[in-house]
Length: 180
Image 1 (cartoon, one colour):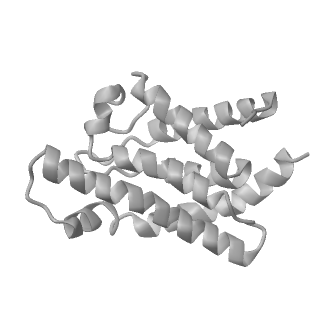
Image 2 (image 1 turned 120 degrees about the vertical axis):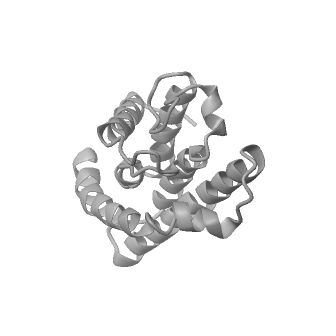
């Protein structure tokens, strides 16, 4: 796959926006899964750049964190050891979300609904099993998969849906402006 200078610039800008979204709202205290604007940014990247470039911008964000730049929401905020954090699966899920959501024509009601619905499904389909697996097998807590849903999906799905709809509305406008 070849990338133009414009593609590389847009991916870099969105990677920086992902970092900013993480740093702006680092709250949630000791919650297992903190509140985040990254789902909004994952959808916005998908809608503005398309699936491949949107996913690439999140992959760059992830790579920065794994290389040690403190861009993630929870301590240690970066480094390879972060793959052992229960929430790391959601970072992988953001990449899947952007790729899936970016495959649809968001200018149609059907395309927008599919992009949001399947994007959220991709996010949770990657993030929840990872969270459950790390907590159960690495941390050794006797939790079932329903625990992961109660902790990491139930409190956030409504907010993530709102974030996705806002990203859709903004992404439609942004995509039009970027195409000129």
